Length: 460
Ligand SMILES: Cc1ncc(COP(=O)(O)O)c(C=O)c1O
Image (tube, rainbow, N blue to C red):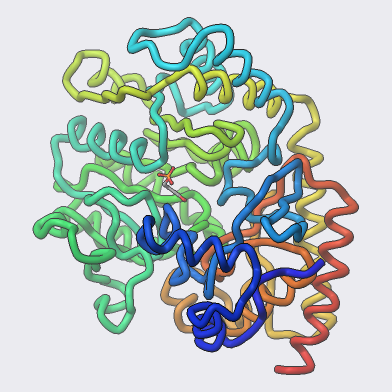
């Protein structure tokens, strides 16, 4: 399979595109899209500056675990829409449910339907910490709701968030995602760095940025300012700086410290929810947060998200004190999709099979990279993983900035793409495995990896 992105130095490749020398359909469509759409794409993660340099692949269609681009190249897909396609592309049960709902019932009523409570009951049954929940459309919205609830419940203003994580693009949390560490303060006491211009000044006064996997830094911050802190927001597994697992005891300490100081522990399970098991990372790791947010895996590829948790916190919504609105919240498409997705995910043995397949990929990649003698290792949990090209262990964002070889990752990505294996070009993203992947997909991926790793080892 030939990938249409050339494994060339990006500056050369960009120049080639601008000069119109690249004749692929993706290149042509991208050039045309640059006029009406800023950056030619509708999300930062698809932009040239996020790694899709000199242009993103334009996709024709997806089916199961495979994608086909507009130039007819087929790929085994580990990008999976950045997570939502947990059941693969066009999962029959979900697609049918959505089509039926639209045909037979409609989409938006501004009044409730019976299927909303049915969906809420399924989430509550699956996720032990969730006693009540509200539905919305995106992870960004769900985080916005959850942090507002935490502030209202505790009557405190500050949030703790961790450097290197992503919790959506709202003003309050779009800080210190991947800051320049030369400008981001000391390792133990990072300063808030806005994602860019346009974030209002003053927000940072209510943000405490901490290094992840550092229980002492968390304890110090809570000791200093605990009575001002409404909420600690964290991904239970760090999925927005590659894949970094919590060190043993870290999340337990976080739970204990937040509980002791009346701080709401908010798990951002937008990526891990319904992926690391029906109960998400919290069930798998045995930690009970106060609030949680979910999106991607919940909707089988359709936009639906949720914010839920302790009934006494959610009571602020029931009492009409904290407003959670939304014209499209719990629309027919979202609810039909999520109900069908959760029914599918509840299939006995589904997660055991998904985990076994994912382990085969993770362990297989680790072996291929080790056999080639490359300075690399694979970190992951279930159907979520990333390859680190690094000699040192990576526990948090600054470790990644200091130790991860981004240039080598890019060559790895280019090589795999040229062999028909697709994942995001950024080392800080993840490889996702879906229930539609097969052992044949994994075998083909490992064969490609062997060839690419051998080439890389020769060049390193
Ligand atoms: C952990 C996490 N939280 C929140 C979000 C935002 O979700 P959405 O893109 O649906 O707004 C993302 C998106 O990638 C995410 O990875």
